[in-house]
Length: 113
Image (cartoon, rainbow, N blue to C red):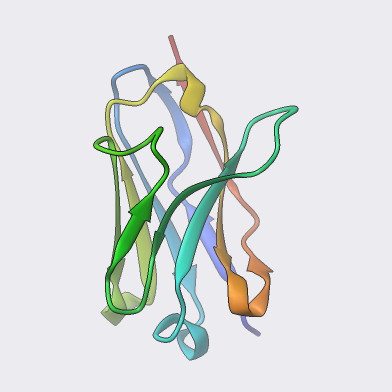
């Protein structure tokens, strides 16, 4: 079964760091752009960062310079390293594969002030 599984969320103080992971089925990982979105309560789901199969990356302006997306092809996993976290980064973070319209279950990130 093709699926995405996120992990690594938690509670952290402002200025701290977290590393999220998105594990994907091997059958789709190597040919897929993996995208991170986030959704805060009452808000729409917003783009955070993306990485294509060749390793090219794209970031939302709100996270540039603080977040880094990377992929480990040997482990079929994409990581989102989040540094200098702010309370406004609090949200559920999801990974997504567009060509399969496939979402993970999400992982909660809470940043306290």
